[in-house]
Length: 205
Image (cartoon, rainbow, N blue to C red; front, side, top):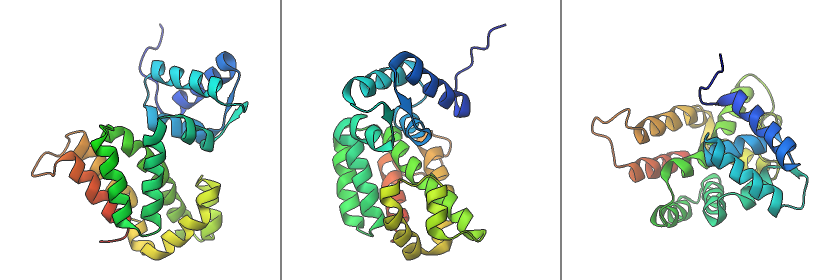
């Protein structure tokens, strides 16, 4: 018997790391693999294509989050992370302008949400660690927050407060369900679901 179900979670990350090393001669960090999956999805052919791009376009043998952010997805991915940085700084208007550019360019909302989930899932994890008594900077580091964004993330978490931080996972889940059509009763159009989420994550409501 040969198992042919779709790979996901830890088995998918292990496949990605092994394929990167054995077929492309590059090493993916754990966080880089996680970001690649969030941005590209779980289709092996698409992931294989992105690994080939990373191997051919990067001069580094070790591929980290920064390399994935710069090479996977072009300007749309960079704009997504610029949008999230604006949210952390409380610049809601700037974040919504970036979102508008992405939406008008035809960027698929599930792909855009991949970047949002990648960043905010780690902030939610840090919130739980801090709730259990760990220092916030240490919690952010241990949760896998990009090292260049730890100070900005610390200021953001303190600005929005614990109550809002503890709602992050629930808000991400609600939008995911909405985009998948799991909750059709009186829901907003997809782009407004994401726009409302961004306003919530900015701490504006």
